[in-house]
Length: 124
Image (tube, rainbow, N blue to C red; front, side, top):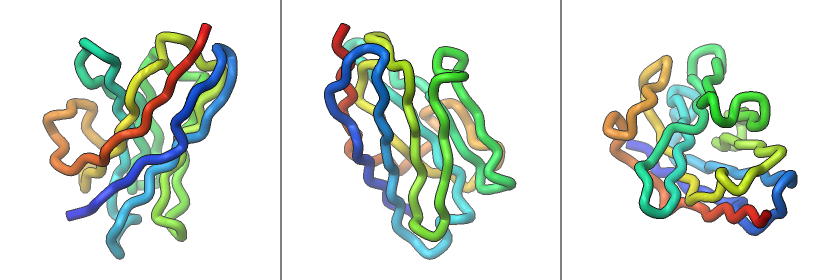
């Protein structure tokens, strides 16, 4: 079992950048794939990006590919999501979660432990 906590959200103008952090508990952090999802009001929670425990392979949704970068620092039990060129459509609550699977699944139903989320607001 692993616990995660997100931070780094805020208000940014369209075209701006934010860096989200996901800090996970547990001594075996390096054995977990970490995935970011987001949920906008009235919409389903959707996959954004993931980083595998295996070779730190990365995966992105088409909508963020080329603008977002996911990375991990196993010495800090932290995964980062660098978000550049933000658009109003990126506005949502962003959640991170963990899985022992590699590659990490893209369906939210495959995950059981979620943080409280961090709000990202993009003004146009």
